[in-house]
Image 1: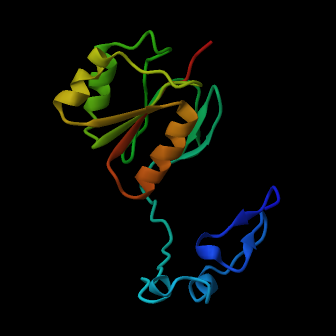
Image 2: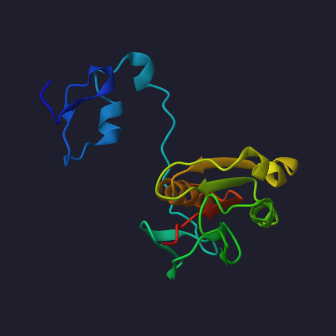
Length: 168
């Protein structure tokens, strides 16, 4: 196989190339698919996102994040519903128990913690306010946190993002 070409599962007769559209439904009827995969497939139903009233990140870079059209240049707490709020956390080393108490007060089911340009973990002792309330937490770099948060919020989950924007 040449570079830039990807073979399809189940030995389909065609290959995928970047920039080439493939008819997914025609692929399901392909005679090269095993019989058990050609019959009884559930119908796919596409629905538009219902994001009215949901906070979403529309842009981000190393020093700022744009939430619902507003640019933030300092760390921010972002609940899926309600107002985004400034998070007085200039760096990972400056985080205290009070920062995570503020986050737990939002009562999300899951927190996405964006730790800055690189993946870094907060001290486990600082996470106690979240653990006591049985709030899940996932840590990732801030760019990945923005993307993950948007997916969860768009799905209607009670998620919150704690986005650490390092101030220089």
